[in-house]
Image (tube, rainbow, N blue to C red; front, side):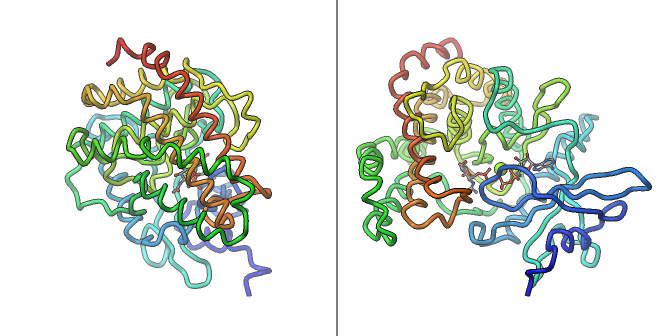
Length: 369
Ligand code: ADP
Ligand code: GN1
Ligand code: MG
């Protein structure tokens, strides 16, 4: 029924945008949602918007998720405004739907969509080029957390339950190995073993949390470096994006996922693991940037676990890629056969390199701890 329809164009026209919608092109490299840059003709000038079709296989409660994003962006916008800071590029701005005024379009034929102002003059990086970018990105993610520290609005909903509960991720891997619906386990025996051997690592943060040693805060939970936009002209962190997983969580998960992406010298799906050496300069820059952005709020016990957090979040992501490979690539978007297995191997090679360099990395940040 939808074969000859242009869904993004149809969806874009349902939002209250300035000017006539001209075209919509696929945009970005996210693994979950479908993202489009929409170009409008505004009195002869092209103006872009960022349109997304939410992946409702992954996000099962899209209305609650959008409520979270409205609350979080509203809170940050109000704070920036009260400090007389310009906010249109520093926080995501949702556009309303024409007929309903809602900040999302939930249409039985088109699907679930939202639209943001396009942040121009800034971009995201899949592979970080130099440590200055790591510093800026980490400072922006830290500042994001600081801005939300006094959020007292309606409780944010858990958009994906147990998102960073690594032991449960490991259990899901074991279940996938047992089920092995496509007979793929034989292709990745060593990778499965790598994951199983590190079961104690999976517990490190959840145990600290359960003991009350590290606090639960409002965190981003998906702090890969291409979820923050850096200014083209100055390189400064401009805006934290991809807010689907903002919910109560651990600062160390946010820090660890930055390590996972910024310290990786290779593309995330590059399985040439001989070349994997985790980058210490990036780690140091991340730690400095994050501690600056979080304005002294990280506890000593959190600072002591910065290296472990990197190992853990990289390990967790590797487990998730491997599980998805075994189950037939239904969660993370893939562009070629075996891509999730390559991603898992890349992550596990990074874990190994982080483990080997643990002391060196700790020494790099000793002055901050
Ligand atoms: P996913 O959840 O699939 O990762 P994201 O929300 O991260 O989707 O968006 C994918 C990409 O689109 C981002 O990496 C970024 O490059 C770009 N992007 C997202 N939001 C905006 C925006 N408001 N302005 C400009 N570019 C954006
Ligand atoms: C996904 O949505 P995106 O591409 O920014 C995933 C993250 C993973 C990441 C691995 C909601 O992030 O948790 O760490 O891929 N997001 C979700 O690259 O599962
Ligand atoms: Mg993203």
